[in-house]
Amino acid sequence: MPEPRVWQLTAGSAVLGLALAAVAVTAAGPWDSGQRTAERARAAAPAAGGAHHAPPAAPAPPRRPAPAPSAPGVLTALHAPAPAGRPADLAAVLVPLLADPGLGPLRTASVVDTATGKQLYGEGAGTPMTPASTVKIATSAAALSALGPDHRIPTTVTAAPDGRTVTLTGGGDPTLDPARLKALATDTARALTARGHTSVRLTYDTSLYPGPSLHPIGPNENLAPVVALMTTEGRLDDSRSGPAPRSGDPAGDTAAAFADLLTRAGVKVTGDPAPGRAPKAAPLARTYSAPLADLVERTLTHSDNDLAEALARQTALARKQPASFDGAAKAVRDELARLGLPVAGARFADGSGLDRRDRVSAALLTGLLTRAADPARPALRPLLTGLPVGGFTGTLAGRFDTAPATAGAGLVRAKTGTLTGVNTLAGTVVTADGRLLAFAFLAGRTLSPYEAQPALDRLSAALTGQR
Image (cartoon, rainbow, N blue to C red; front, side, top):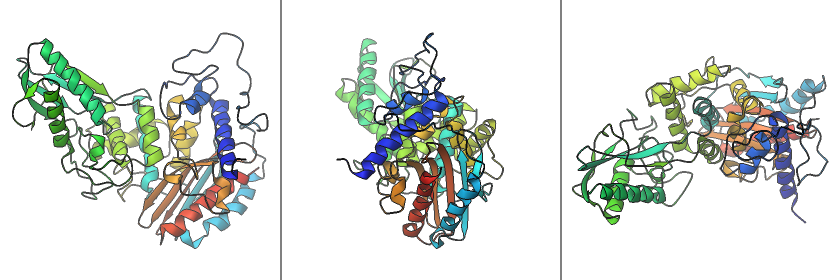
């Protein structure tokens, strides 16, 4: 028989799928790929699911979704109204847990029913706090709102009019990998050969990002230099997430690798690659990132700092701001204001949360998550499907493993945040009566993550028992 935690994950996933289906059953989802295709289909498809499927003309959609196959007929409606006395009951549960010394002297909280938008509990909910990596929820929401979930980031190759020089131009895609770079070189060589060119010089263009390229924390294994051209986030090992040794010149390294691949594909590259500007001409070849929905999910699941900074700059470009730390800060804040969110006191000094000058309130985070569950905003759904699952995936894989927090395993999905003296957790939870709640707990001046993180887990897990 499966272990209890596996049953919790199965039930939690089924209930979350029903929650999203209940609030989004009439909204067609724009996604066609990604690591959570099934969840997205449940969240946004009116019947058969899939990308760009129009709702069937008849019969009319049911008032509520059919039970998920893994949870036959035992789940209550997820949009059931809360009894009038519930906020007081919730306070009785949360206040003692918030008083845990492990959370330090600064702690704020917000809990919202996503179906009604009603705040069920708040403690300093509007107070701006250092959010650490939970700011990635805001960064991701701004990118999805400004660009849409189908947006892809290009990397292009353009030839000079005489065909003697080609330029590799970065569009800001940190997920460009060796396989795609090789395919790009092959396509470029084919196009050059067709034009009669078998020898070229190579330049590379990173001007899309004006700089600075170094984060205020300086060279760090948590983040490569923020440049518009790089391969595998500038990682110098085989890792795909988390800290890793980073290249000091990811753009130059990518250009050198491209030159070698181009030579292997039959076009000789003379001299060393050098910085340059792309000519105004149609590209010879181009490669694209995965859709933005997938990039957001990866950003949230693995707390990917490089991707978060890229998303912030893509937002800046979409809103005609410089693709820099300052330009991205303004673009993200303005985009969240357009969504009607409480941005008073908010500051987005970076997109990743590594900068201690970032400020976000618990109310802003729960507001973002509530909008992501809104049937009128299916483009924001990856904010929910990208959240790590407590006890199972991403940055929550090793948590919710000690009672009483085990009650949240499989039912809590949340973005973590950790800096020295700062510990945060924001996400969603499925309650005992089948409602989907959004929560944010932010703690400052904590003494140790080994005390603060379990306390945050207990807070979110306590929400699963609400009726």
